[in-house]
Length: 140
Image (cartoon, rainbow, N blue to C red):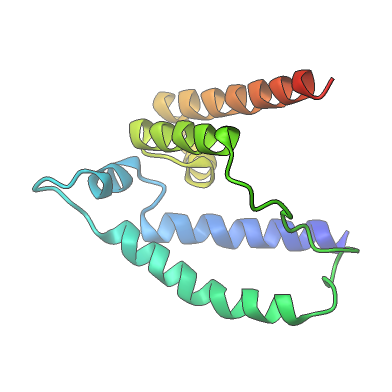
């Protein structure tokens, strides 16, 4: 129960940060990706601020013997860069560039019920289901 409450609290803080910073607005993201006269550096400052805040916490967590609310840390063990990783990153980046959302801001903006946001989240969920289905097919 502690882990669920902590996850909900962290998700709320993350969503609130996205709203306050304007990152739930796809125009902000798209203006960052467009290096023409409308370039908006806000996303760079948000990412820089997030790194500055998260880095000490990550350093502290890695020094701990174990996590507080679960049995073990869930850290990827693979450092291999393969075709699936590159292809997935490319698809993610293309979707981000076209829609102006990545998953977090997309879910936050879903509260507006704007048709383009709903379409983005539905497409994102379809992509997740397709990936899960393809992964299960390749492991059998």
